[in-house]
Amino acid sequence: MFTNAIVRQPAKSMIEGLSEANLGSPNYQLACEQHAGYVKALIECGLSVTVLDAVEEFPDSCFVEDVALFTPTCVILTRPGAPTRQGEVAHIEAAVRSTGKTIEVIEAPGTIEAGDVMMVGNHYYIGLSDRTNANGAEQLIGLLNKYEMTGSVVEMSEMLHLKTGLSYLEGNNLLACGEFVNKAEFQQYELTEIPMANSYSANSVWINGTVLVPAGFTETSAAVKAMGYGVIEVPMSEFQKLDGGLSCLSLRFSI
Ligand code: GLY
Image (cartoon, rainbow, N blue to C red; front, top):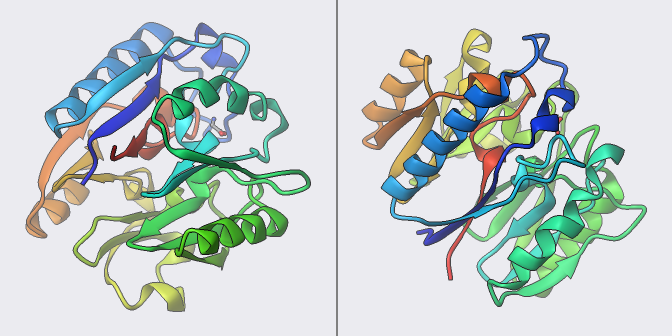
C-alpha cells in the first residue's frame, strides 16, 4: 500500500521537453489542468500528495519518477541518461530527504532513469534502455542487495523506458506491450497483452487497489476492470506528447 506521493508542477518550458512522439507541442494550460486531475486521482486513491514548484530550467522536470527510486527501506537518487535531465536530481533531493528515508545515489558512469525500473514485491526489473546503462543497473542491484532486495536486468531495444510498455498491477497481473510480451521473465505473471495501437495505456498505475488508466483507452480500462480493480481514467494527452506516462508524473511510497 502507498500512503504518499510527490509530484511537480509542469514548467512552462515543457514545450521544449524531450519527445519522439510526433504528436505536436503540448498546450501548457491544458497540461496544468490535466496535472491537477492527476493529483486529484492520487488523492482519491488515498495518497497524501506533495506538489513541488515548477522548475523552468528543466523542461521534463514534471516527470519526477525518473529521478528517484523509492523502496520500502531506502530511496535511490538516480542519474538520468538524458543529459538535459541530470540536473533534475538536485531539485528532488530536499523533498526526498524530508521523508526521513535513507538515501543512496547512483554515481557516474552509471545512468538510471527510474521509469526503467519496475517493482514486483522485493524484486526490481531494470530495463537496459538508451537512458539506463549496464553500470547503473549493476550499481542499483548492489544497493538493492544491501537492503535485502533483488534486481535483474531486462534487455530492450524499442521502447523509451521499461515502464513505457509494462505495468505490474499487483496480484500477479501484468500489462505488457510490444517487445515485452514474449520475454521469458514475464511469463510467470498473468500477462495481458496491450496491442500496439493502445501502447500508451500499457503505462497504467496500480495504487492501493485502484488502477489509473490514461483516458481514451476503453479496451485497456475494460480489461483492468475485468481483473477486479477499480479504474480511474485520467486525461494525459499533453504529457503523451512528451512521451510521459501516468507513472512518470509521481513518486509513490509509504511512510
Ligand atoms: N520527455 C520525457 C523524457 O523523454 O524523459
